[in-house]
Length: 344
Ligand SMILES: [Zn+2]
Image 1: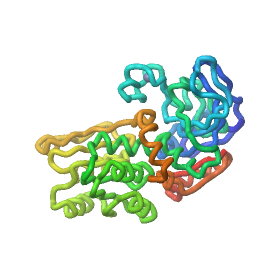
Image 2: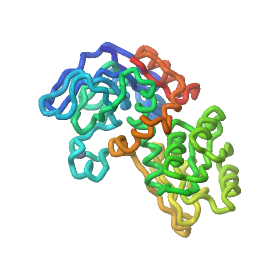
Image 3: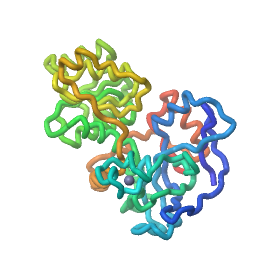
Image 4: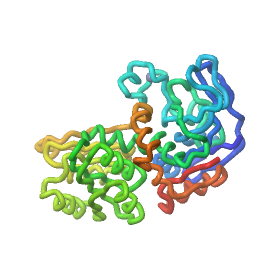
């Protein structure tokens, strides 16, 4: 079968690899129907040192089960399933707490002999705990939105939940990438009344408005902070969702948060230290967020997609076949594509 490998910055290739087979009795093999490229795939695409040996990549996919191990219950051949961006047993103490990203028997895609999601098929470890059945046909028009349950939509949701967004909230979302837009949608779904989206790509902020943003602030830095304060009677918003990962974005978040408020970050931090000094302390700011336990949210978020209430798949603007994946990376890196859908 074909799968995507990364050899270093700017060097993603699609190659023939062995077909996956059941190794452990807890495994399943899934033929991939849809996968996609994540903003976080762009970090290694931008900076990974060159290597002779490629590494499998991709962590968002849905597909049809082709084979199941002897210890996998509740899943059978032919089931359409979605996989969250880490695999997990769904039974250990961390999973029970809803923190599947810290599963005692879990792990990531593309490492340690586990397939990546950007391929034609995947061996899924801990299949029973990891995979969630999708009650639609494999050619359903809902596939793009259901695929967002792998990562991007639960990540936006996690940001809103950990920030404490609820009915009537006033929220600032920083970043108009696919995660930022998903955070807007999640905040709206949780009942936020005012959603200020900070982003400057009109095509993207237009999707943000469609998702529920009430205001768009294109300015950045001090100017952007002043604009958000102006929109909020000078105070800033009680919840701030930081969906970028750069230090500048976090500092903007601290600049627009209301005293007593919460900043949640889900952009993978591209910095080692957080400046949370006297001003942060004097204003009683809370900093939260982190990697999203997508598996914990899939069943909660799926019904609204099935009922057509929300359409998080709007974040996909380019579709490629498996051979088009390297070009898809480049399009996302060049910001020509918001998020690339892969139909292998
Ligand atoms: Zn677990």
